[in-house]
Image (cartoon, rainbow, N blue to C red):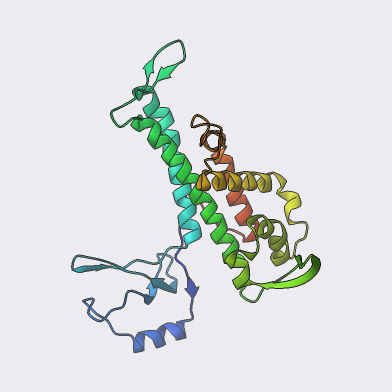
Length: 265
């Protein structure tokens, strides 16, 4: 599964505006005096001409210019790629790395550095997939909230319930939890209070994913002894159905914004 990663922003402009830009633009053959933040008019393969931004990368004496990718799609694509990589390791590498010790038991040897490379890579790609998937979700939630949006809610202040109007800046600063954005704000901005009635399983899947990522990011170490440190979080990470989480994430995003995520043929 591969998804398309569109540029961000991606504005369609009129022929008159394109003509005006061309008349005022300066064509350059070198990077002298170019900033590292460019606004450009480009023509897509469809023939459409659009305004995009670029954050070029300079390496040695060359400047490499490309459209700036939408972070939501970029993080999601990394999550998918790393999940697929973890599955490939399990399918292709484990049988080669493991030594058969019984009817269906294979032992991955302890190497000089202490742990087997195959197993390390498997955990690395799974945990990275989970982190990037939640990063994509968090970026998407902030992305779809209008700049002038006000979230009306009840909060306790000095032990008294009071009504507050929370603006987008405060929403993004952490005044509103991930779960609250998901359950309360999304129905508000989509004007569908019954939004989650058709996506009950997706919501539960996304919340499981978020809790899993939170546990793995913090990896709290309070335990009876070293044999139990980390194991609850890692155990749940290894058991998480990441494919389900990916599908739930894509279904949710496309329910909020039609065709927001599109698959690459």
